[in-house]
Amino acid sequence: MNNFFDNQRILSLIWKRKFHFVIVGIIAIFLGAIFSGPTFIKPKYKSTARIYPSNLGEMSEESNTEQMLEIVNSNTVKFRMFEAFYMKDIFKVPKSDPHYLTYTFDIYNENIKTTKTQNETVEIKVLAYDPQVASDMCDSIIHFYNETVGTMYRAKNLELVEISKKQLDKKYAEADSLIALINKIRLESGVVGVYVQSPEITRGYIKALVEGRGGASQADIDRVKTLYQNILQNGAEAQKLEVAFNNVLDEIGKIKVIYDLNLNEYQKVITYSHVVEKPFAADKKSFPVRWIIVAFSAFSAVFLALLVFLVLDYRREE
Image (cartoon, rainbow, N blue to C red; front, side, top):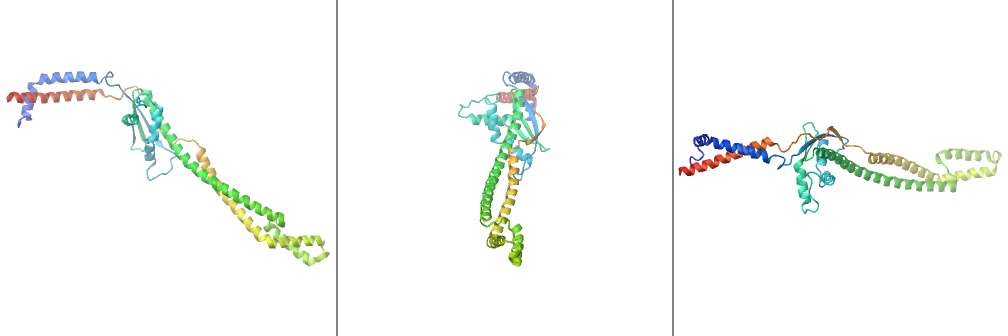
């Protein structure tokens, strides 16, 4: 066996068996061309799309393109694709099969590739038997990506809307309680507005004391005295309630801004990608590459023939 793989021996054998190698190579090329044809290997067509991320917020330290790639490759998008193309083209696996998900995921991962390019776009490549279906799959992945991101953001915005709504309801209830207390003081004491009434009633009370009965009737004087006494007794409480009420109104205004902003974000419908390369139905197959199969078949056959001839030659010498 020491000279089994001797270079001189191999070259000599190749020259001696050159016609055999040629025949083996021709047969391998012929068979490779036949078995790589559409009769044995169904051709697939490729569709490609490239998209840029847009309108994405910060979720982590990842870039927007990396966020987009995560969502495009998520099981949420994949399950949407399984439903949309169930029993069509490459996804012909019945749900009754106990390994339906395993087979379908394998088919998806084999025929659909998504990568980040050096220009920060996400490239989507789809292989399918029908060129139009391949193009439709690319479009669907982009569509499902936009819907998935929209659903995620709307869920978060709805959560903020509900929180703001609860805060507003609480503040409105607080404002109603303050209004009820203020109205009660107003009805019972006649104190309508401390800041407005207090200076006027004080001047009227002093004037009534100075002028006595000569400048006003006793009823008017008594009324002024009563209002003055009511302000002394209830003014501080009324003032405190008015300040609290104004503060609540300010808080309601601030919360309402947040509520309206989140409600607007929740209700709006936008896309989260810019399509820079739209998919289209290819007019030429991308798989299989027949010349590679034929070349590999010819090389393998010739190499195997060389090994067989080496063994035969070695045994003959023994």
